[in-house]
Amino acid sequence: MMRDEITVLMFARYAELFGATAIQVPRFDAATVGALIEHLRRLPGGQALPERPLVAVNQQQASSDRPLVAGDEVALLPPMAGG
Amino acid sequence: MMRDEITVLMFARYAELFGATAIQVPRFDAATVGALIEHLRRLPGGQALPERPLVAVNQQQASSDRPLVAGDEVALLPPMAGG
Amino acid sequence: MNRLTDSAIDWSELVEATAGPGRGAQALFLGTVRDHHAGRAVVGLEYSAYGAMAESTLEALIGEATARWPVAVEVRHRLGRLEVGDVAVAVAVAGGHRDEAFAACRFLIEELKKRVPIWKRERYADGTEAWVDPTAPTGRAPEPAR
Amino acid sequence: MNRLTDSAIDWSELVEATAGPGRGAQALFLGTVRDHHAGRAVVGLEYSAYGAMAESTLEALIGEATARWPVAVEVRHRLGRLEVGDVAVAVAVAGGHRDEAFAACRFLIEELKKRVPIWKRERYADGTEAWVDPTAPTGRAPEPAR
Image (cartoon, rainbow over all chains, first blue to last red):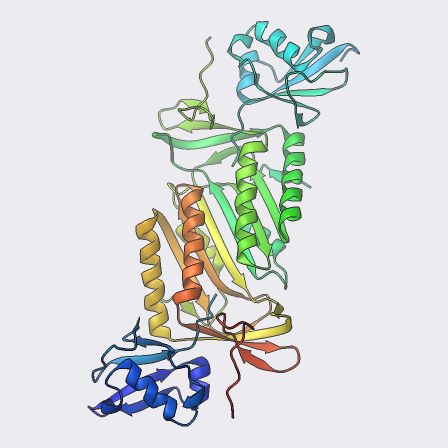
């Protein structure tokens, strides 16, 4: 991981959309959670991503205005279906 | 059991009051559940019996005006404490 | 069907007995002997029952539960002398969804306590004993005047 | 603490682990794999998770439950490939009284379903598969446009 990249973990259906379980994104394209999602929706496979998917930053759910800094663990979470 | 007697089953604390697990009572002293209880309360040990204890007739809870006939299975039930 | 038993309750067997491929939600309730009651240290207790009526009342309660919810049910109550930690009662329910599994399980233990003729005599750490009366303010039956 | 496991859940061990001499009421909930969902015949499913967050969220839920009720709690969720009848999740609670045992058990399974990042892919009798989405009207996630 380069210093100015954000790693985005992908799970379940979202991993299938992108064909990847993690994607590195330049941090200037992902200054906030909302900007990151906009960026991801333009990537191949990203068109099926909802406009406001559930996102966790450092394992806590985060809203779309949450700023991202290098080293943040960002994860895209499809609707939960445990139990 | 004589034809004209009612057998009253006693359980738990009530069995201790009377020092018996069953008592035979002449049926003319026990025409109804209420009359039976009045009679039992006059027996040795019976003074500690409540005026309206829980009573089952043939394994169903019965009210004090329930008539009793020979062959009925009558039981005095202290407050239930299972579970 | 014998739902009263003098030996230890095999509650895991009850959970397995209620399972089924359409029943995705299972609830189990266990009532065990506590080491205290109403402020007194309990070392054990003894359950007794009006056996025939207890069995028929349990049967009726299970009929009410299965008429009200689409569930499979197993209930056992232990009688005789129990020590602290022993399982006194087990209610196992399995249904398609957790609403009905929880509701039927709760219904059965509540009604069992109210309606099934079973009695409990507690043994205390100080050597005394008393009948439990859940309807009395102290939780214990009054001692008879002797 | 590993609350996620790839092998069969030993739920009776969880019930025993929560027991204690002051805890007279124990509640267990098991979620098992059903043979149908939303009108389709299910032959099995596969659970996956965001492991680290699932563990930390379960830890937080247990903290919330034990702060709210005086109970001991054990929770396990199975991951990987499961067949019909397999136990997917187990919640064991023990407390002094049944109100708190039932309430905490119900709270934990409800919150787990809402907040713990675990996903489920169902396998159907007709050979197809789909991701489950409890928030979708059909109960299944839309297929991606390819």
